[in-house]
Image 1 (tube, rainbow, N blue to C red):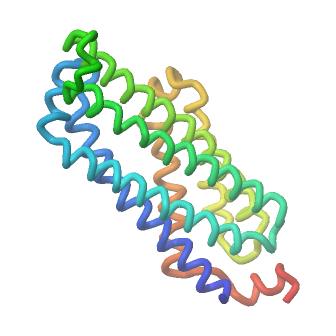
Image 2: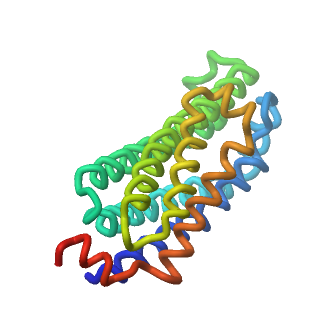
Length: 227
């Protein structure tokens, strides 16, 4: 595969990751009512198919991010193979955490569908447990964002050191990484939201569009790869 093909495939996968992640966010915002277990339980039972579709879209988004990670690793490997591999590792760990967190999406329907062995719990307790599982899932997603922040830092550093991609995009990716790292402290991340997430959107979208439209400077990529 040529470096230009790898760059454009990385951009395509990253773009598809963005697009497929929008629907789950809309579904979650519509069905999960913060602090109201009863309303959340009622929404989930009335919209089970919609919620499960959102979970499936999230898994598809994660798969696209895995693809983007592997192509970006290949593109940036000539700059520093070790750091490129480390950045990819952090991203894949984040993807694994995000995928595993989707398991918590199955718990609400187990709790709310009235299995006989759950009769020892009151309805209110089952609703509270449902909201608890969704909160745990959100916290797991925050952990995944921290690993994505480390990935962005690595990618940004490599772009700054490269000769075939704009250094401005590298700087934006470094800032994006620091934004995602605020999720190391959820209270801090919540207090800074949405400003801590804006650099991630700007940096990652800038890189995505550049890879799709411009790709990389192939001659300079070959020079840095010593081909």
